[in-house]
Length: 470
Image (cartoon, rainbow, N blue to C red):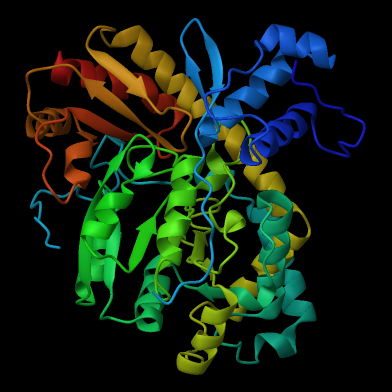
C-alpha cells in the first residue's frame, strides 16, 4: 500500500503534508493516471493518522484536479499532461445586451442586494488601522512627502512579496510588484505594456467589467467557452488569442476551479509563442471557505508567462482602492523602460499604512476572522434556503467557492422573469446568463453574492424569493 513518513513534515499540518506527498507522486508519475488510491479508512490505519486527515488531503487534491472520485468506488488519480515547457519563437463576438446592473444600490432601495459586494463597517479593523496611520504620520514624514516610484513604495511591495511567499508559496521579488489604484487601472497598464494589436481572450461567462474595459481601449477581444475543468484550450487557438485573462482558482461567476491538468495545458499554450501571456486574476483567493487556498497558476510557471493580479478591495474594503500585479522579470524590465514615467496612483499614506498592516501580521489575522465571519453568513443563508424554499425546485452549487454561489431554480419562468419578480420583492439579483457574451439561452441559475447580507436580512430575503418565484 502507498505509504509516507511524517518525520520531516516540519510545521505543516498532517493533512497538508500528506496532500503534498500525494501531489508530488502524481506529478512525477509514481501514482499513474487512473490508479485507485487506498480507501480513507485503510490509508489512515496504514499511516497511523486519523481518517479526517486523509479525508482533508483527498478533498484538497480533488478540488485542485489531482484526484477524481467515483461514487461507491473511491478516489483515482487524474491524468496530468506534463508538457515540456521550453521557450519557442514560434473572433468575432456576439454581444449580449442585458448585463447585470452593478451600480451601487441606494440606501433603503432594496431589502437585499445579491449582486454587489459590501463590507460591514463593524468588520473593518478601524482601531488598528488608525493606530498604524498615526505611527506612519509620526515616523515617516519625509517619506510621506517624497514622490513614490511608479510601481509603488518599496515597503509595501516587499510586504506583499513576503505575504505571497508565506501564504501562497509564490517566490517573487518585491521588484516584480506594481501597486495601482484598483484592478481596472492595472488592466490599462497591461494593454499598454503588451500592446493594443493583440487579441485578448476572456472566459465566457466571465467578469463583465473586464470585458467592458478591454472594449473601451479598442483592443480585439475573444470570448472563450468553459467546461468543468476551466477555459477551453482549443477555442483559444481557434480564436488566435495572444493574451488570456482568467481566474483559475475561483472563477466568477461559476465558481469553477481550473484543474491542474488544464493549468499545465494553459502554460504549454502560452509557451508556444514568444508574446503569449496569461493574466491570472486571483481576486478573492483568501475566501475559499473549506480546505487550504488553491495554489496560484503563477506558482507553477517556470517560463515567465503568468502575470498575477490581486486586490485588497475584497479582503479589506472596496473603498481602499489598492491592487497589485506581479510581472515576470522580462516584462518588469519592459515596464520600467516603456511605462516607468507613470506616477503611482495610490497615496503614500495608504501604502505605508497597509505595508505595516501586512508586515505586523494584522492582515493574516483579519483574513482568518473574515473567513469565519463569511462562513457563518453562508451557512445561515443556506439553512434559510433549505428550510424555506422547496427542495425539489432549488439546487445549490459551488457554495465553498468564495463569497458567492449558484442557485438553480427549477421553473418555467425565464431569467428575466426571475429577476423582475425578485425586484418586486425588493431583492436585487443577477442570473448566470447575464455574464455570457455569447448568449446561452435560459439557464435559470441565480448568482448569489451574500457578502453584503447581514444576519437579520437572511430570513426576509429567502421568504421574499419564496413569494416571488413559488
